[in-house]
Length: 305
Image 1 (cartoon, rainbow, N blue to C red):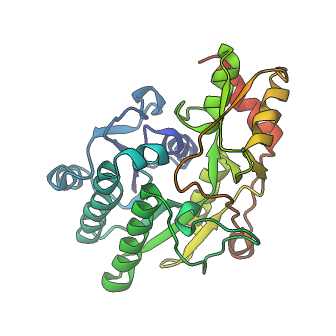
Image 2 (image 1 turned 180 degrees about the vertical axis):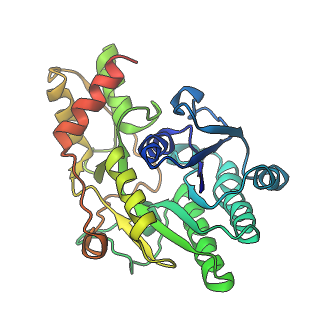
């Protein structure tokens, strides 16, 4: 068995590679090494390729070099602010790159195509939680590009019989996440004595999941999930942004640290909430890491990096 992890030098992908290592299968990492990826993130004994998935010839060359049996597709442009400034790289990476990978996976008859997506494709929800039947209502260019990629994955399953599983996960946090993301930014600004920027009034609500819990869910779905189906993965930890800021400052013993409210992001979703009912019922999975433990491990990492 040869397992391909796209985006394996990034935050979630590198964590997944470490958690796949005990299975003693051949692991192949593909990454284009943009600003959010680091070779140092990739564990030893992983075959590493620098590939831009939007380059069809490069993807085909990869499949000529490796007999890939299983794919975890995580490679994506993912920062909403960047997508608002320029959406074209998001179309190239998240849509064109996914289609190129799907086509090669189909032609080479892979056993499983795990497509890792986001709960942001559902838009904002005022009450209740997103489930697998929730309507897609992306509200920014990033989530629109991810929604398009989800639809192509579903189409390749329905039209060609490619054995796919789609996952839509809530907000991840943990070590090795890029500093542009919310939790690393809070920690680094507090560490360096800079005011912490908070969008709008800070009342936006997000559901947070520790990255290792997310990867554990992906592996369990790879082993036990239903082909052709989709699963939501949530952290069961909803917090207002301003409450998260204050909690991190409390854990860092910096409760008097200044916070700076800044102009809100255009099209900023107010609340995300992701139901785990299906994944709990079908494969008996729940997140294991509480927010305090996960944040303490994350803070320790960024205080030393």
